[in-house]
Amino acid sequence: MDDTSPPNALATAVVAAGIDLVACLPDSWLSPALDTLDADDGVEIVRVAREDDGLGVCAGAWLGGRRAVLLCQNAGLLLSANVLAGLTHHHQIPVLAVAAARGGLEDAFYYQSYKGRTTTPVLDALDVPWHAVHDPAGFAVLGDAYRQAEMHRRPVVLLADKAALA
Amino acid sequence: MRRGDAAAAIAAAIGPDPIVVCSLGSTSRAWRSAEAPNPTYYGSDPMGMAASLALGLALAVRPRRVLHLAGDGDLTMNLQALLAIAGAPPCGLATVVFSNRRYETGGGQPLAGNRATDLELVGRGAGLHVVSTPPDAAALGAACGELWAGTAPGFCVIDVEAEASPYGGPGEHSGVEERTLFTDRLRAGTTSQESSS
Image (cartoon, rainbow over the protein chains, first blue to last red):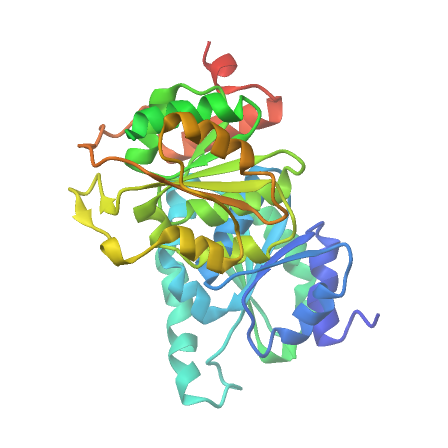
């Protein structure tokens, strides 16, 4: 497997971080990585119909001592504001989410624009740490992001550009 | 069936080993009143999150069984979680729903769908192993015995009476304290009764 290609970089980082449970709701940028993870016998996939369910799955897994990650689009983070706030401030449960950062400079769709403009202000308002991943090599931070989530007892988000994913 | 009687019957039927993830409000108060020894995580808040949290926990603690004890108001806030549960890798998760079609703690207002919605059919349509609604507390014990008997995750709707269920105050522990108590208990392998004695 070429670990430097966009889909493999995320999948490799997930596995390297000891994560073997992936909750997901697809985005077109994320689909190659999801296909790679789905083909990995050492990783289990939970397909959710809403992104906040994926956060719930990851939170429950952590309670039981298993490492999980949510893969979704940044619109799913906006939808999940209540759960992100609850996990951050009420339960203090670590969760890692990797989201396709739609609506940026390279995203030529009107309907994606609002996501790019609103996601990080919302995460900041919720007091959820986030880090930008601009290219495949940037996923080297994934393990550190999971550790940050555990140390800070809260969700941490990686916002991945198109060049990092597809 | 009264909610407290149902909780007591479930506790007696499932024994002390299954981990319980309990919805908020009247369901959590009923389960606390049963004083069951099971390690229990109380999923309040956000409302609606207990189902997916129970799924993640069940996937982490296999082969141990996990019971999600849901209120119908809490479950219907996130009904699509049943699809994730049905499609997830095999695990020991089962769901029991206390249903009276009202937001009991909020003042008894009807749920969306009210009498027109059949949660048992919803569960069956999602692909769950549906155990028929038991007519009384005695039959509830037998129904609990069927929850983990299918190849799909178990799902049983229990009709409970409308009862006043006012807020019980802020509770003894904050959310993070509840979480810490639960994880400590789980990792130490002790039951609720042992850890509180």
